[in-house]
Length: 408
Image (cartoon, rainbow, N blue to C red; front, side, top):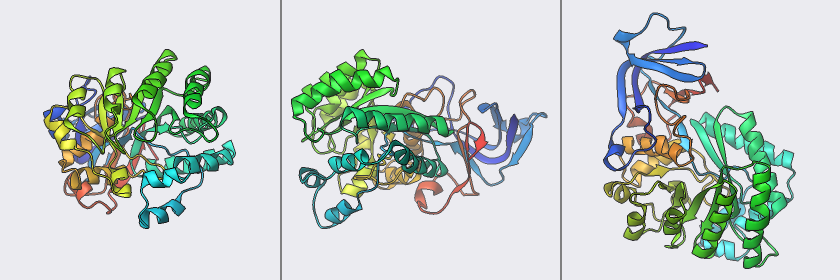
């Protein structure tokens, strides 16, 4: 099927073929075409250009007068597969308890693990796919989903099977991450649990081909640098690419161990020093910041501008989860990138599209307006400019989302 978007006010997010991430000064610009057309064939972007070059054979035409056409958002860090909710802990937060204090009282991740254990796989799928459909409607075209609320082999596999079912059920690009090392499961000692993650869980995940990535919560009160390295290496032995939760609670050494072991991304980074920036220079690792967690937990926002000034790229993601960021709205993430982290709208767009796609290993197929990539697109209502999207951050801006060229 061939269809052509015509009279587009502006195409934004244009990148040449072969560009997989943007770093440093590159993040300040994006290719654009004004008064433009764009053609989609067989779910892929085939060509685009100014209206005075519109080809005769357009197929179906879509009139885009006054609208901007942009890449769909890519969300490289989410926990959307979970059971129930934790609004009871929301009250605890309002009354002054910290995330760490709630966890120490047996809440937090362990609370979600208890809920998930008592939820059937079918019910977990129904709850989770509803969230995935929600974020797709808000413009997300690529989504990484983590396990980590199972905390025993049976329930971790249950989560990952649900993620596989979601991948097979939606038009979004979905990638799965095994996060058995999200916390220590109830009834286990720390050493015993790390051994089970490495020797039992990871081989079982690999045997069923349920994940692309292995992740570890390397932070104060969770897993040490040494434990993290052991788990990452165990995952790599079974073909799982490392990713890291690091520096949410404290400067943990997680960034450095992630870089040393070839992590594709190091995520959170609310607490960071110049040493983390230096460690990332020259690496293939994408620093990924989660402003939704900063907003919800009252944590510092990541030093995105300092990372960019040092020549690094930055990705932004939602951290959609029941305890620290119960929202997967990537438009809100983009807005926080501008309002709280002082990124320009273009920098925030790049952080929420091509760089977040890179942080989940899919920037070769989505995340920008590039011939040959999937036609994962947001067509806006008539708006004045890209800047309007983060500026007027609750005003509806989406006319239609297209994933692989098809309307949701």
